[in-house]
Length: 458
Image 1 (tube, rainbow, N blue to C red):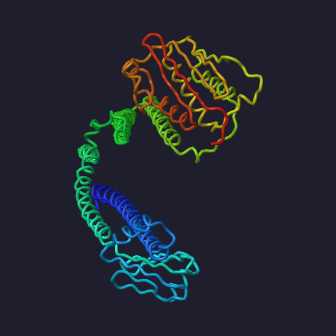
Image 2: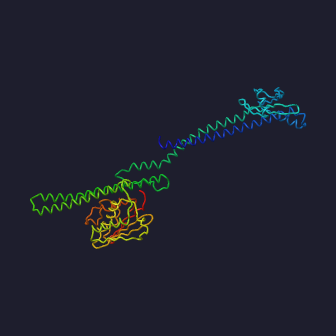
């Protein structure tokens, strides 16, 4: 069953239940009021008969005449009977089928007043003490007029119920259509989106209702998918280029060397050149493996308490060994008194790779003799490192791709590298629930800001 049909049926079901409860309530209280009112009227007729027949000698002539007028205002099917205490009939007025049993007489004597129904006839019995003795007054009548109105009310309610249900079903059908119109539109727009059309977006994402939130969430997912597809495309093309370059060089060198006999020195030169290319391939392969390792689940990586300052200093010392022509400095904004404040949970080898890549990247694009500074900040929330260099900088339109593997900015193509350092660092930092940001200006240098949360249980 479609959602539209479900909404219509549920809406109609709820309305039908409410309408039935309302109708039953109205009918019940109307019937109860009619019955109670008619019992009261019948009881009054019994009392009038008692006054007229048993107390005529005790009241004034005017009161007797009034009782007489009231008594003879009878209904067509009214019956009034008076019985003595031993059950003998004393007075009988009216025609109709009325069965008064000894049990009923005994019950009236015991309860003083009894009300009951015999089919459509309502019967009231009253125990009436008098100076002439004790009597049982029985009055009965059929409230045909009110019963007819009650039947009319029931018919009106039934007709009204079915008519209302018809209106509700039709209205519910169109109401559900209007409610589901945005969903139908979303489905239609989603069906148009494919792997080749990830630039398309849903149009109903600017409202404030739940469907607009759904469309907005879906658009954000498309943004992530589009970015992922672009990154994958860039990764494949860049990785292919980076792998092809050293392989092509190696193949070319070896083919040239095998064209004719060479001197031993020439073979040594070719082998040395091939070894350099092989080392480059090894570094590239290691980088790919590290990216794969940094993309795994944090639960699969062993974490342990680490001194954050020692980690940064170790990365600085290693960067000095690899780039001795660059000066690396480490500064503290405020060194904490409690050494426990320097502890974080992390994987030492992965974090070492991340910070070493940040330092090496800063040194690689700096000129000889320049200084790369790292400023450490420590707070209750976590740790920060701001690495600054005064190198050539990165163009603004290239900053959005600095974390794409194998991407290299236009102005650094002549500098050796594979475009793996910062993407690898970003994945490792994210693996530790941290963040990394890069800001740069051409000719002024680059800043890399890293944040890692304080010690916590991963």
